[in-house]
Amino acid sequence: IKALSDYSVPATLILVGVARSVSELITEHQSISRALVQVQMPRMKTSELEEILDKRLARLGMKIIKSAKAQIIALSRGLPHYTHLIGLHAVRWAISSQSLIVEESHVDSAERDCLDRVDGSITTQYHRATQSPRGGNIYKEVLLSSALAEPDELGFFPAKAVEIPLSIIMGKQYDTGMFGQ
Image 1 (cartoon, helix red, strand yellow):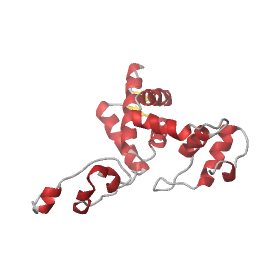
Image 2: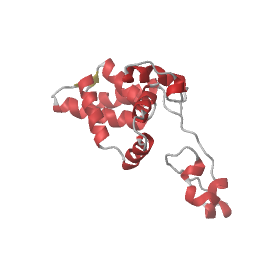
Image 3: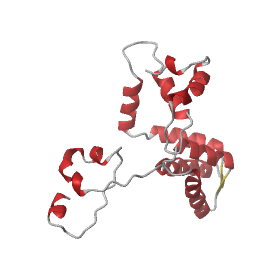
């Protein structure tokens, strides 16, 4: 990339990767950063994720009930990879049940399949985020509550949004001061 830039080669390269920034993506090669333009990929809208499911299911001559579609969309959190992955496994479960209609039970089974195939780095990050030498922590519950918190259009949420899901999970009232750190 640096050589192409240094010699003004009329070419366009597209680097594809998952990272929070270009700097994180090219950690080993910081010198090429001035030759790159970062294109932010925002999370997809619900309608776009629904379109993914509708088009794929139509090709298969299958349908999906509204609640199952909503479940896949909610689990995907705007990320098309998860819409594809969960949808694929839900379709497989429907077919194995000899059904051309994807139902919530198929999505539930698909969730388990997807969790069984989780990338090792995600498992490591989860372990790091939920472990502590101090007993009695609620890191797992706070992380789960964060996943259930209602995000804004950019996928972010305030700590206050964790209070209700955490209170439901724990069976008692929690406010931000009790889990904020």
